[in-house]
Length: 124
Ligand code: AMP
Ligand code: ZN
Image (cartoon, rainbow, N blue to C red; front, side):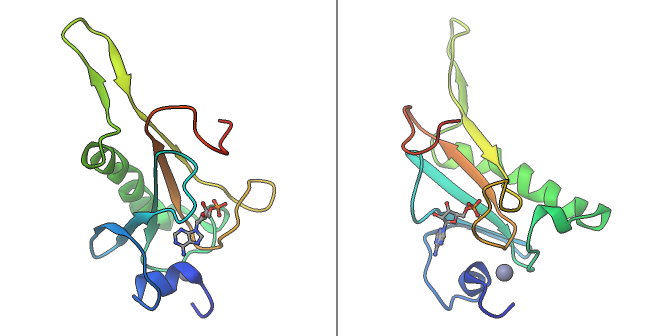
């Protein structure tokens, strides 16, 4: 898609700190992180917004969400439980859709946030 910044990242026309890539997905570090770890997971194929998704997108949406725990483990933000049963760590996933949803880039993306709080600029 012309003039889509995330399509340009997929095409390697602009740089990104890529943390994962396969045939369908790309994951990279958010350029303006709102948490100590802030990653974006995108489909390589352009989809503007979650609002455009239908059953036809169920597989790629599932792949995007299923990638989150793998990325969390690889980036040290997974949920941990110690020998006493105390739980720590963890992460948040988010998809913004449309202006009221806070979407700024119109190429579908899943945010993955994690790391010690407080998180800058993310009051959620
Ligand atoms: P959203 O508000 O859900 O559309 O989120 C868009 C996200 O994309 C923001 O968190 C931006 O910081 C991030 N972003 C914009 N341009 C780039 C880029 N070139 N590389 C990495 N992240 C970007
Ligand atoms: Zn795109």
